[in-house]
Length: 334
Image (cartoon, rainbow, N blue to C red):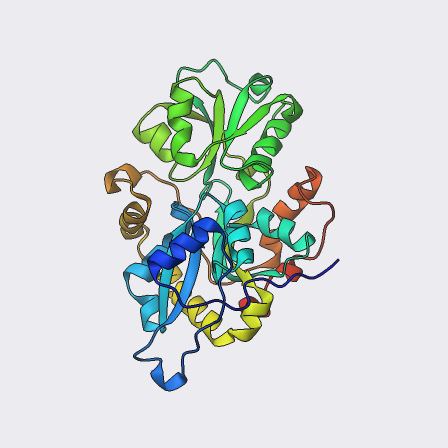
């Protein structure tokens, strides 16, 4: 397998320049060095690809409470539709660090890209932290996985974690996922499309489970796909290019340290964290009171990556298995 290094030399950009280049997928050149004695005054600029979902609560808190700034980092944020979009943007050089579901990183790894997880992300725990929901309209006659056969379903991206989790849930609950039609829709468009009968069901991640079902009361949840795969598993986390990591080890350590402070802040006050999530997702705080959040832990575990690796292989999203350690930076395991 040919090894492809990506995102090695990244320039310091203004937010406007960064967003423009990220949108165009342009390659960024020439990294700007920050001298150690300038660190208190100058900030190392990082371009980070994210999503507007509750899974990034610790990141949002680290922004709000200036944990990144205190670590000497100036974060430029670009919100994207998912890991399937973030990974190519990082490969193009438009991003230093990205948020991605694990499946996109597995796929990139087998394509030869040197993606590595640098910090822990969102953990799904069956029963307490189930954050994927399979939903139908509240007046839908669909009651089971079998009833979904022949229907049109939506995922935010195809051949990725939401999609494969949905297929696994159907097949594990008496249906046949090969008899279902899937289309791509951004999470905010799923509920309107369901209400307008453009689709028959969708799989989404919080807050796009609680808001449609418990707040707007327009949908009902058929099941929680991730909980059906394993008692706990890693959904998504923060990643970068191995070559960039090797050249910017101190910056990576600073990012992880600030993020870990965000994890601690979230765990200390999940309800307060929801107000921050609302600000960064555009949802009203009162809409998130009943929202289920993933679990956040500082240490990334290889065992948390294995369940989705197995499912991705089962559904041919990846062509072979490999040791989870291959996609984890040693800095994340330290």
